Length: 79
Image (cartoon, rainbow, N blue to C red; front, side, top):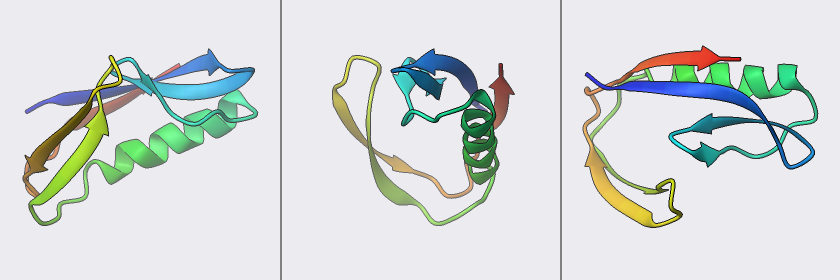
């Protein structure tokens, strides 16, 4: 099973969470960024149907893959 770590960091004049080198949108406060990261981490645990997903990797290249609905990662929020 994989693990997704959400790290709270200063970004673009505010705060964001970063996952595998990719930043979220910017939030005004550390607390708002942490709340958003915790919400995203909780949503990672919700099972669903297998579906195609698209996402940018840390180099900005868009990737496509099929995500199994029952293959949920462990998550952690740091910062």
